[in-house]
Length: 519
Image 1: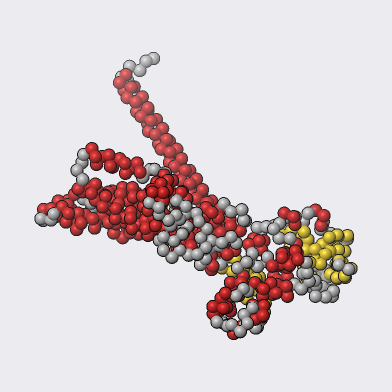
Image 2 (image 1 turned 90 degrees about the horizontal axis):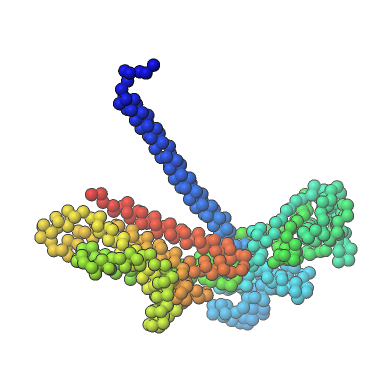
């Protein structure tokens, strides 16, 4: 039976309300999905950033440290070829390489062959004589005496000690061991299972540190191991349990930059507490070097500073004056529209185009010096100008028109209104945009490569026309180096560059918060 008491309109209204409720629920579901997608995108971005930072810090942390070796150096005047000269100039000019070689050979008197002696001398850096020279210049009275001087290890030794050359496993057997010499070989006898699982023929190297010496295992049979003496033991007395240990190096000797003899020499020095991993102060004091252990960033930092000084001196006044003219004085016509469009387009031009412009104009046409901070600063100024102009115009627009009207109403001229009232109020925003533009210039590499700022700079640049490089270019050069030790140097330099960028952006935020006016 049909319900005649309900009108079609009422039934239609009920249907409309049901449809409306369903639409609301559907809209809410879409909003939740959109919110979830936004959270996922934000989480992914944060995760990638954290991964990048962890990777850089993980690789670069070790770059701030360098292993050093303590050598007992006898400063023999005859070996130094000083004669009766003891003045500072003679002490600075003499070569200390001979006394360093003598110190190494006195530590390992059993090293006789020419090849082994050459390998022994490569335990310490080529710049090790600098440490000895500094000690002598600080106190010339030590000439003729024997001094313990800490010198830098080579990059291969440093890389090995940091665990990047071969996986190593060490253990101390809980049984006693007895040595017996058999010509140029040695027999090690140990009870139990001290040598049971060792297979010297599998490509791994097994080095036994015992009685102050190091033995490379060649053959193992039961509880007896035969080996080659790499560092002669002090004696053949029975060694108690726990007083000797075995080191297993997974990477074959042929695939390592350091052979087993060099590792044995390092192990002897470590056993005598004469190898330390110290903070590498010279990383912040020196320039480029072909030896990774001696390379530093100071010349690049100084070059970056000089380049940014030129960039700021050119781009800031020109950019602010251009923004003031366009915003406050220029008539609104076709020509100003063209200028504004071109400024916005220049802000999106790839930075390498500015490098090509600098190469064609500053170097080729005007003949300015290559790889000089003055040229790099001019190129970066051209690149930074659009950013500063756009930021300055935005800051000027943010000043309320009532400020201008009040100043004009009090009888101030248009120039006085702009310079005394509008510009001071807009300056925080202008400074913020300028700092952000300078931070962008600090991280640029491509335009500087085009003008030749890829020189190998050892000396610290002393002026705007001296040859120099900048921190991003130095990072680029180190990243392209085949030396494994430069990987840590590259990541460490990236950490320094990121620290500068974070400080500059933090300064921009601080200025904005400190001088921000709310209208």
